[in-house]
Length: 116
Image 1 (cartoon, one colour):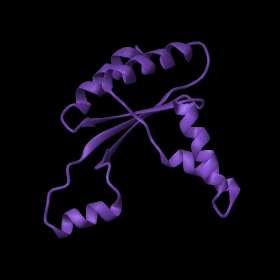
Image 2 (cartoon, rainbow, N blue to C red):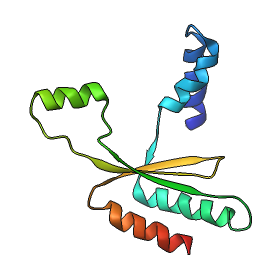
Image 3 (cartoon, rainbow, N blue to C red):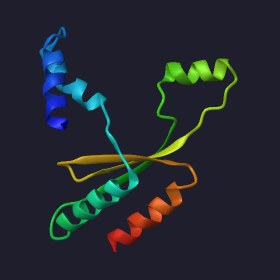
Image 4 (tube, helix red, strand yellow):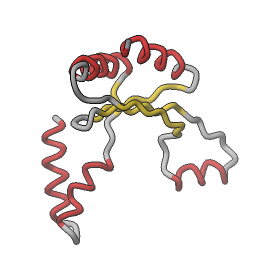
């Protein structure tokens, strides 16, 4: 499924002014995994990197909304709900998930447990 999406995006990118920007279009789309598949993939990434390689884990506060959408919410005086965006990469593959603010602590503990 991901391959078909990438193929379609390359087609769309080739219609842009600069064909070299087609690859950049692919990086704009981020697929968020559910917590269980995310942890399964994270475990396999850690296992593959035990001998050589590195795994980087980053946490970011995010509303998962564009700046325009956030400004509209602010103008309407509606609260912006922030989440914890977690990204993991091993230089070959990147996976992401999003957790409610309160659940990110348990996710961090799970990641630390898998890393040991």
